[in-house]
Length: 305
Image (cartoon, helix red, strand yellow):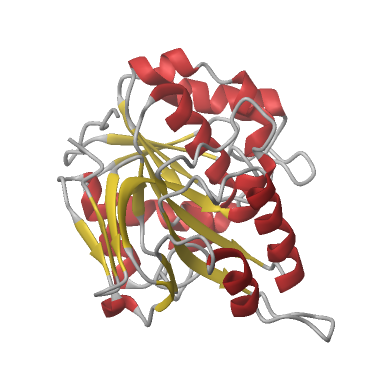
């Protein structure tokens, strides 16, 4: 795996929107967060474009990202928001160029598709964490989430445990492996494509928002039938916000998780504050990790060099 270089005070970071159009007021408000870190911020030239539910056309969003990739002054690319649309530009990206110009890529939700594509096409470590318009600009953005950006300035081994909130063990055990994953619906949408998620002997992070238990059931079943659950080493279940069933009767979300994970004989811990929640704990994807139910913890190796 390729570790991107760490950031230094005075570095320039690029902000682009490869999915939905960000709220411009929130976007510009969040810029000061990075400036206070001593970073300079450069916005993509098309970041104000709106094309329905997309932040401009596929060509415009691809151009913005490519410009940041090839610009040697840009040391990190932080995504403005998620939404929908990242998968639409995945096949247009120059992965050879991405590999030749390793830098930080940071975001979550719809950005899961880009994390998976970049890692599997280039071997570059990327970061699953909060974004500008959708998170950082909010009044309730907390100091724990903000502190997660420290891992971009120096190599940090993080331990994610119950210090951030209660964790629930579905299956006992321990495992090591590369940490991959992210948003459940985006991982499912990668199946059958050139960017299909590889879960073999890996620790899989799963999170989502607004998906009722029957929808999560359907997506886990698709991963199961595709062999993605049985091939994994273990699972970290993040936040599943706004997941209450709108129609009854319904299985609970825990019952859905139990039905898919209980017979896998692999460690499964739920409740990690990763994804659409506060705090939103950032985690590097592509690094080696250690998951243990004995003391309910996940250890992730540093993401930068």
